[in-house]
Image 1: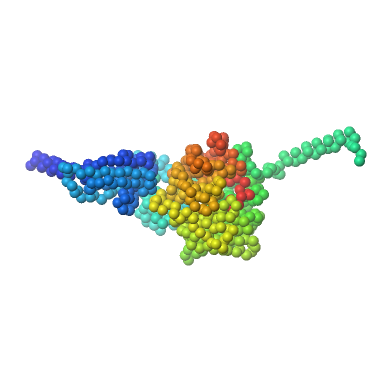
Image 2: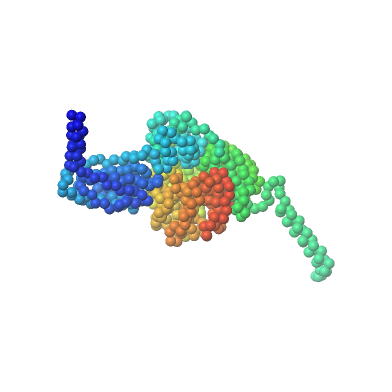
Length: 226
Length: 404
């Protein structure tokens, strides 16, 4: 038994791969270009677009299929989509209309013609963004903490005030911000607030850093004189 | 008539020489520690993190004074008295400070509101108006002693709050014009009789006006809209016609990028009959015909523009950018609409100011703690001045420019 079980498993795996035989093709996004911009794949194959920019976000939008524009994805994230029909599928980047590409999907004789279409997904490959200098996964380095607080003071400060008492954006002092839960603060920093000028800061902080920043705001930032 | 003798001529010449010598000495004398000189080549640089400002000389590239105690200057702007001796600094914390730039002294400081965004000086120089976020509205003060002349609360947003006010400028006829961010209005306040401010309200101008500007001739007031595409314009020669929308189609079908810093509409970059404006949420500078306000072109640039300003002669337009692209400055040729130069002064390039006739531009670079001075013809860096976390740079030539 001990020998047969793994063997059986191996055979099953083999069957599964030969019947589905899906290949994943990679397209890199770098310097505002899809590379390669033209690609030929077989029906049932998947394409993974990986954002390899330093800090620019993009989207992969099959506008001509009448689809709504998908979410942006940020450096080190990817977008996947599989194709279950033959044909030519042009696409573009939502925020950058000049970035275009085309997927040519051809019938592959030996493959199953109709593979169920997988939903397109955006996944984070690596939780630390490109800008993050911190490599250790458990701790945020002192240097990085200082960078985050500097950014908070000067860049968040351009709307919320350098002392965080508010400006065009609301006050971020503890008595104001503690009306929100930690999760709400994290979500606001990560995704911004639609309908207001608050933008998503996801390209600049990873999840740990965002959580840390939210906790600092709840506690109150010490106003250190420079 | 008797001709003067030689002796008389020599005497009178000597007297003339002596008096001119005396005159020269009296020019060089100082009034206490004050400089006795004109202020035409002076200016002020805001040090945003330390609540201070430096008085600088644009001829010698030297710092003359540092004035402290100006409060929270994370957002600050400056206007000048018409004699260009006094600078009025509007701070984030609602502070209004009057600085004597000849003496480098703080003459008077009041905290007139909780949170303010900017201000303006009236056409005749007698009134200073401040635009406040908290409490939302505009307050007007006498430029001499900063005593309150008028308090104009903005429209109510709810029981507790009034709308934030933005884009406050002066216009001819002793008017102040500003916009209401939360309620989408533009108000014109006539101060011909300071005891009776006369307000004209224009409603439904568009969603979330975030800043405003007036053309150099003082004729057109334009409010930029954050909440929707396009801008709202008021012809102050024909205020009865009301506000209308321009560039409504701009941005349609193109998704906007997140905006990490609001653009500024200070000044109006005009070259010939073209005006250059920052696009909101796009890496573009818009080119608009200043006769019919139709969009002529858009120029792809390095990032989302913050300031788009023309060299005084209109030959080039200089552009800086929002975070995270705020280390760069680009220069656009106003004839060909091509980018002719890209400079990288450094991270936190926040503001640019031209000398009165435009041979040099001063650029503040926050993260390097310096102000860099460039030759605007050769793009060569001529000098660097140490300034702590510099932001806005304001030269006295603003004293005689409507809207600045």
